[in-house]
Length: 339
Image (cartoon, rainbow, N blue to C red; front, side):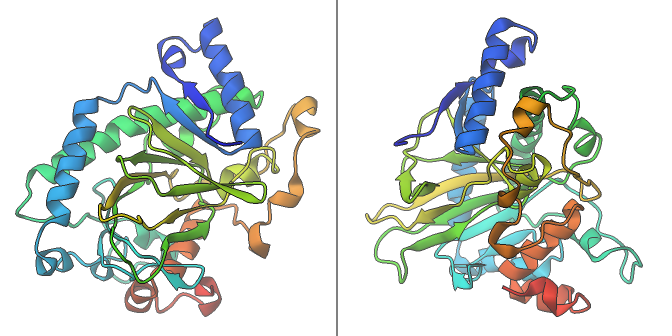
């Protein structure tokens, strides 16, 4: 494999029962079984909205450092806000990127709540007062992506021989999508690790790339570079989807290498998270699909995959951001934050 499959979801959005839609369903299922990644086109997200989001992202990243740091992620138990270069870790090593995390506007649980720790993953965003258009554009894009992601999940359900609405209740009426505006600085970074080799923890991820490449996907023993494709979203699967399909679908390791030129790389990543209360047991797959399952892939790096999504998400976030863990999750067992 030298490039990702290119899949047009347009026919499925128009009529999931059409023959062209069924062709997309079959191709998507094959891509997720063999590669775990694909380029998605025909998605209907307005190019103008995407450009507005990139324009606002660049404006945010051009703000004085002091103004960005006033929105520090460590302020937020919900992991919303700004992360400076080197403050997030993958595989125990700092990632050479800075970013702004955001999600749906939510109320934080009351101080001293007696619910599970992962409820603290819900809360308000932190936005710069000097860029009033940024939250409007970012949250509109998030709403449009919710619709796209649900349609992708419906197609995946059909490809697995399941009812089309299988995953709907995990996102409607409540979801916990989480997005990042990410910059990988060009020039001569202290490390080539933009973000280290990893697999995602949820169900789906969508990545909108600018013109600077850097995303690499593992294919066998090789790493292939995913060149930016105008009008396309890179889509990949996470560990909970791999677990739910007993390894039939693949959560493929990937990384981002720092740009070698002077130009920065900018991307928008959307982690298509279900509601934290969602649980995912192994699906009852049709015999022809079950025969191709790979249960040995379900236990990634020897780590247990919790059936409750909130537990999985909290585990990953605490490990990646020890400063947030120390300030807001001191009551969580140390084992949860081990690397």
